[in-house]
Image (cartoon, rainbow, N blue to C red):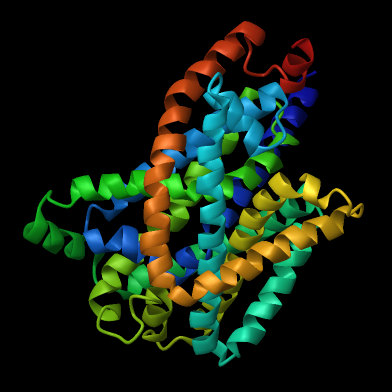
Length: 397
C-alpha cells in the first residue's frame, strides 16, 4: 500500500515538473533571452527590480493555478471554454480575451523573429531571412503534431534553458560589480521612489505573459489529475521562473553601467554583456540558450493559437489534422514577420505593455477573485479531498 502511495506521489511530482518546465520554456522567449525584456520592465528601475520580478512570477503562478483547476475539474478543452466558464453568465466577455490573445500571439512571435534577426545576425553573420526560415520550420514541425510532443519538447528545452541560463547568469553576477554595492548606491540615489513602479510593472508583466498560458493549460489537462497536482505544478512554476528571471535581472543590474553605453546595448543587453567577458565558451552557451528560447516560446504561443482555431468551419474541408495545424501555424508566422520590422524594443515596450494593461482587467483580477471563488465552491461541493481525481469530479457532473 505504501509503495503504491509513493509511486503515485512520484508520478504527481513528475507531472507537476513537466508542466512547470513547459511553463518556464514558454516564458523564456526571445525578449527574455536577449535581456531586452528584463531591461525594459525591471532593471531600469534599479534595486526594486527584484520585487517586481517576485510580484510578476507569484501572480502568474497563482492565476495559472486557478485556470488549470477550472479547466481540469470541469473537463474544458480550450481557453475559449475556460473564459466562458470564468465570466458566466456574461459568456460573451470571453471575446475580450480573444482580442488580447490574438494580438499578443502576433507580438510574441514577432519578438522571436526580431530577436533572431538582431542576435543571430550579430552572432553568426547568418542571413536574416535564412535564420527566420530555419526557426520557422522547426516551430512549424513542433506545432502540428499535438500536445504530447509540445509537452515533451518543452520539458527538455526548459531543463536545458534553465541549467544553462543559471550557469551564465551566475558567472555574470560573479564577474560583475558587487550586487549589494550596486543596490546600495541605487537606494541612496532613488530611495523608495521606484518601488510602486516596480510592483505595477510586475503586475503588468504577469498579465501579458498569459499569452503563453493556453498551451500550458492544454499540456496540464492530461497529466495534472488532482487539485494537489495543480498546487505542486504551480509551486514549481513559481520557483523555476523566479530563479531564471531573478538571476537574469540581478546580473543585468550589475552590468547596466556597461551595456547602456554600447551600440545595441539596450536591444541585446545579455549578449553585449557576455561579449565583454572575453570567454568564448560562455558566448557559445548563450547562443544555444537564445536559440532554444526563441523556439520554445514561439512553439507554445503558436500551439495555443492552433489549438483554438484548428477546428473552425473554414478549415473543416481539410481532413488531415497536421495539415490544418500547419496552415494555421504558417498564417500566424507570416503575419508576425511583418510586425517584427518595428524592432524588438518597440514590440516589448509598447506591444506587450498595452496588452498587459488589458490583461490585468480581464485575466489577473477576474481569476484571482471570481475564479478563486468559483473554484473553491465547485471543489467544496464535489470533492472534499484535494487528492480526488478531477475525472471523478467531472463524471459526477
